[in-house]
Length: 45
Image (tube, rainbow, N blue to C red):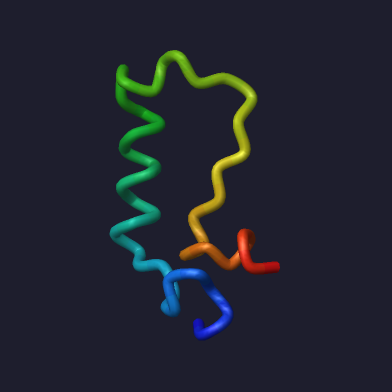
């Protein structure tokens, strides 16, 4: 967790929020995206 930009692990709620957003009409304009939900770990790597 210390190696992530946020200094913590992601929560299940944060992952669920992304899943809910991707299922919602508000995400209809998104195509071919890679979305990292990893508390910034990918950014720090």
